[in-house]
Length: 216
Image (cartoon, rainbow, N blue to C red; front, side):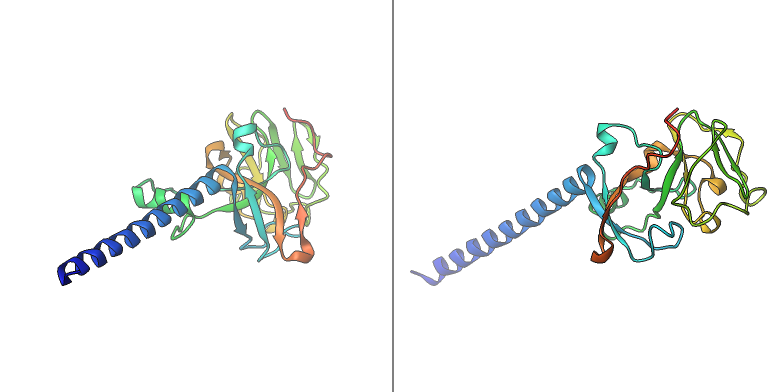
């Protein structure tokens, strides 16, 4: 074998290795995008707005199947892009949003309280009223007792628009939620909290409360 032939063989082998590596990277990206956008993704809790049920550092699995199989239900815990935060739609932003890396989009986690068409009102020191009925909410840290007014102009009474939700944190007096920035368009929802997988001693599957008023 000549020296020239040896160099050609080495070059061909190098190209083959490089091609296989690129194919593996591409396949991995396709799998990541598919899983994240069709099945779900992990998220962690960064604030205290969902105390006492979720604490800082909790790791949750956010499922995305529900957005294809039916509407979300009152009482579901949702992760979403808040309406006051603009989302960039340039190719890089869309790519990083799809793969879940190198992306700086702000996401909140709150409980779905108000459904489209609901007549909604928060009465400080009393609770939340849906269509005139006081919600039974044993999951809250405390009943909302401040903020309604100039700082939180969306306490109602108001009728929730179609294709929108009213989101509230369980830690009612320490949560930036729909009372402050209004209703949430449905297309801003990322997914629903399915279960907490970390820490292991607090592993739990989230279930929709059965003590809330029926859907309107």
